[in-house]
Image 1 (tube, rainbow, N blue to C red):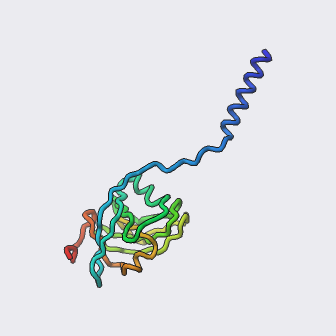
Image 2 (tube, helix red, strand yellow):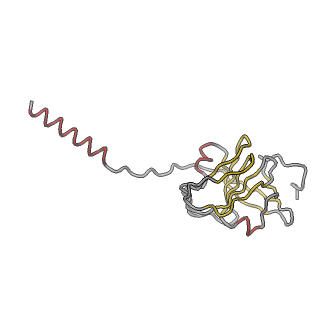
Image 3 (spheres, helix red, strand yellow):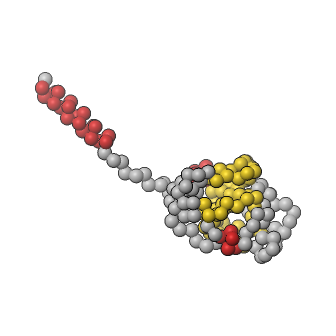
Length: 166
């Protein structure tokens, strides 16, 4: 009987120790993003080509640029949403400062949030319904002269009859 009690006590101690042991931090699972070239049609200058990764599924939109330590000049991520809505974004687990360009369903840049703070959990949101968000390395919008009212040319957006063929 004593042996059974001791064995039971040892089992409890082993289980308790295993439960208290620090767990390994989960590594982000690999998600593969398609890359495409989009153009920003600026009203007062030539179009600007950008190489972007496309976030067009829930898993891709949830991951976004989290955990990335570098984003090249002229690179970014284009988030595409099936239905226009007031967009909410944040910088949790994102170590690189970003410019966020909120894009209406017709491809027009509706708002720009510049230099979002890395790792911040503050919500960055659009004031109107949009269908996409283009994230670029902080300072890119200003450096390239991208402004509210310019157009992002991508097949997802329903471009109005405008200078999309420049």
